[in-house]
Length: 340
Ligand SMILES: Cc1cc2nc3c(=O)[nH]c(=O)nc-3n(C[C@H](O)[C@H](O)[C@H](O)COP(=O)(O)OP(=O)(O)OC[C@H]3O[C@@H](n4cnc5c(N)ncnc54)[C@H](O)[C@@H]3O)c2cc1C
Image (tube, rainbow, N blue to C red; front, side, top):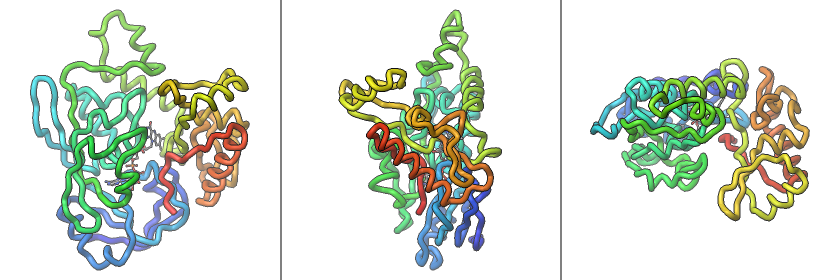
């Protein structure tokens, strides 16, 4: 077991805050992870499993063990003319998995192109973009119980997926470590082109036969690059807040006041409002506390100018929540995992 003490988390998290952990341990197999779980060091310390650190905000130094998976196998478990079932190790970089699927003509991951992070977290976070959520292609999630070291498998239904949500963020929070994920992907062309630039792409083609996953991937990467900060250059966790879902009654009141407010009808009684619009319309575009600021191109993002401390980010997060609550009566909740 290779355990490093006082390990800086700055470069292994995309928010790039100047924080460190007491111990940092990486493992390459389920066997190695079991050894760690059985060790005295593990029993005596709190621990947190991380992936690519792209949705984590450390409120300060972490006084425990940070675990990181380097389980990177990729197995095709079943293949028929219609679909394929692939098991992917939790430590595979998510976008490498997307590239692999596209190269093999397996449909289902292309709309999730370029989302930072790793396979393990995809199943925890229920990542989503451009009208697709990863839960649509997840079959099973293989885990290790953090207390007993026992292996357990959860079916898709047992994972209780919702918008950027799963049982691993609620009832089973910090109770299981995802070791691998099984995805079921279509071998027959199947596209979701309902969102913005993908809708235009569909309209620009003369027949459905011309559609390609690579073209979709390229459009998505271009669009994302124009809106979101590149984590290598500007620290962030992507969307810092969830888009709030409000009652139709509250929406009607707000819409009379702000007729340009964008919205998405969820049900007859519920309406989703983009948090970025609420923040921008509250006059917070570019607003700064210390080295943390509201990203100008997308106000849903809190960015680090290179000098932000955890306190700056936490103070800005609180300021945004308070301002939005006061102006619209809506309580924003962070999408980012805040580690206290
Ligand atoms: C620029 C940018 C753009 C983004 N765009 C999107 C987007 O379009 N859509 C979207 O959904 N997200 C987006 N995100 C957020 C982020 O990429 C996802 O939440 C991603 O799934 C996080 O993966 P990670 O491996 O970095 O997980 P981490 O940030 O390291 O961890 C996230 C959570 O998962 C847990 N976790 C990680 N690995 C495991 C494991 N093996 N077992 C158990 N628990 C685990 C951690 O404890 C933590 O609670 C974006 C982030 C950035 C920085």
